[in-house]
Length: 198
Image (cartoon, rainbow, N blue to C red; front, top):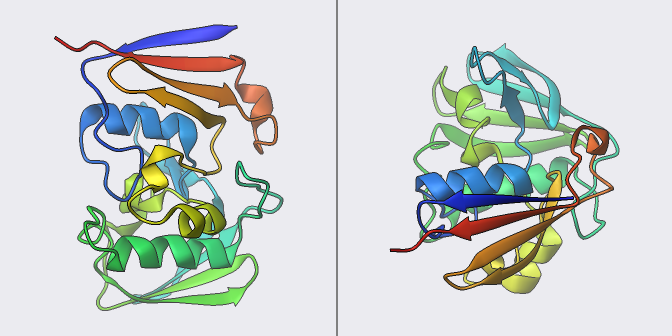
């Protein structure tokens, strides 16, 4: 069936790099998966697209990634995609995420499913930031094809629902993504967000 949700106003951006208000946040979680997840009631961090992690020293965080994850365009989620997304967040003009992951000095691809984040200094909040918009992964192929100004018009990511369409001041339509790694947990065929604009 279809789930219809009213929102207090139009999301400003469907690009996690530039989104910054409440409706952006609500919408993004249906479209995107993060590197780190959390328990809603306790806020305890748990695996997301990174199945495990460890600080190999106070300034190096190693992320082991989930296998077999696909973006909505059919391309693979892997360490290169993590490097691309985090580099985009750190360096792209207009990024709202740069300050959140500013402690990252460099991003190293260890192997196709392992990433090492080298930090400028120890940063205990970093894992929590990776459970929010700074940890949302996007398709490098789609981001390159659309460019930074247009990615938010048709975002391509790895969440349980894929972007279908947006009608200005009226609705945003998402469809269930059957290729999601945890698709069985999501039962609506379609989710429609209806901004209530006064």
